[in-house]
Image (cartoon, rainbow, N blue to C red; front, side):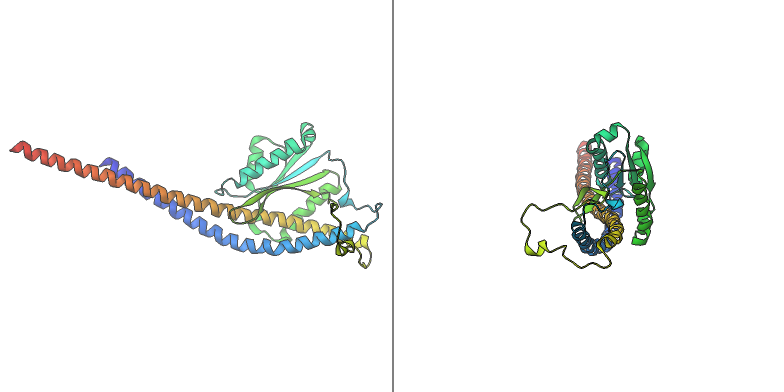
Length: 297
C-alpha cells in the first residue's frame, strides 16, 4: 500500500506541473502573437530603408567620408549578445551564448588573443553567464525588454554609436536569435557598425536596377544620407531586439508545449503502473483469504 500511495503522490505532482506548463504555454502564445505582429510589420519598412540607403550610397563619390561608414581595421571589437531575462525557453539562450563565444574566439581570433574583444549583454541570462565565467563584459542592460519600444531603444543605440565614433571600438557586431516562426529561430551574427556598403550583384542588372540610383535629391545626397544612416541604425537596432524578443516567446511556447506533452505521457505511464500495482495487491489479498480459508478446513 505504501508503494501505491507514492505513485498517487507522484501522479498528483506531475498533474500540478502540467497545469503550470499549460498556463505558461498560453501566456507565451499570447505574447508571441502580439510581438509577431510587430516584427512582421517592421521588416518591410526596415528592408525598404536599407534599399533606399543602398541606392543613395551607390551614387556617392568615392571621396565622400561618412563617419559611421568608416571601415577601420578591427583592432577593438564589441559583441552585443542578445538573450532573454528569463529561462524555460529551451536552448534559446545557450545557443546564442555559444555562438557569441565562437564569433569572439574564431571570427576575431587575433583580437581575442590580444584581449581586444569585449561583450555587451542585453538580457539577464547572457549577462549572468559571461560574468560567472569571467569573460570581458563592457556592460549590461536587462531592463530594455520590460518595455520594448522604439523610443526606449534609441538611447541605448546612440550609446553604441558614440562608442564607434569615439573609436573606443572599431567594430560592433550583433549575435542574436532571429525569429522565423514559433518553432524556428535562426542564430544570426551581423555587423552593426560600421555601416557596410551594399554588395555588388554578379548578375547583369535589369534596366530598372540600372536606374535605381537615378533620382533627384533635395537638398543633396550627402545630407540625405547623413539623415538616413542614423535612422537606419536605430531601425536595425530595434529590429534585432524585437526579433530576439519574439523568438524568445516562440521558444518558450514550444518548450512548454513539449513539457506538457511529456507530463501527459508520464501521467499515462504512472497511471498504468498504478493500476498494475493495485491489481497485484488485490490479487495477493484474494490469495491470502483463499489460503486462510483452506487452512481452516
